[in-house]
Image (cartoon, rainbow, N blue to C red; front, top):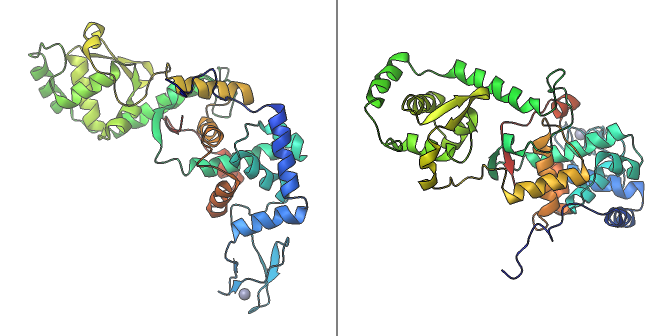
Length: 353
Ligand SMILES: [Zn+2]
């Protein structure tokens, strides 16, 4: 098809020249510390600063963080209790929002060197911005994190001792399965009743509508219990009952990690592919993997969702620019370091691929 994008001509990273250019543009647009501080103060308090006395303080001078309240004469700060609370180096925050918003692919290491902050500080800033983006991904496509774990290869505090970083996924699934088992309320009588009914069924595919749907979905690839719950938006007990039925009828087999796969592969050819993307052969997912490899090399599973957010900024040039990302950060809630680093990517992630 003419004009169709293929993986060959799709951009998967930013070159050194592009990085140089983006940073040059940033320093050209905001040459002084005052210019950069002004940017974040305006984003944090776009309509003036609300004083505790109730007054709106609008006499803040350009490039100054604080102003004096005209009513109570107290000093008020434009960034207090905002996303930018306690920001010391406005340059690093402003620049992070600029380069991410404008679509640059850059690692924390590279970013930190270029804005002259410690790698740990640079990394936290990039995480803060990425976390703000994650918060507006609720309406995006849902995918199982399990099938996006290919570029996971970096340890986090979630990684089980003496295991590969990828083991975090199975560990997260195991814990979710334990939680769902504890929450399940299907009574043994219900299941027995359905079991005796099921042994009479000899059809090639399940007759019950929901069981049929689960079976069709599983025919694409083994899927985790929690992801099935989310996909079908069913109570866990109901889904568990359906899966038990499928298992007893010999359609489905339970695997480790609370995953399920279909048993009668011979009839799966006639079954339609499910509408939601669950295969790693997904071309778009592979391009995301390349993006991670080229820019970050390896990432932790814990923060996978944040890299998906960064990828969204990288590819969606209509949705994201400096201004839109700045506005988002300005209205995002303040996050403590503990909140920021306590995040763990859920089993089902939001993606824009
Ligand atoms: Zn006041």
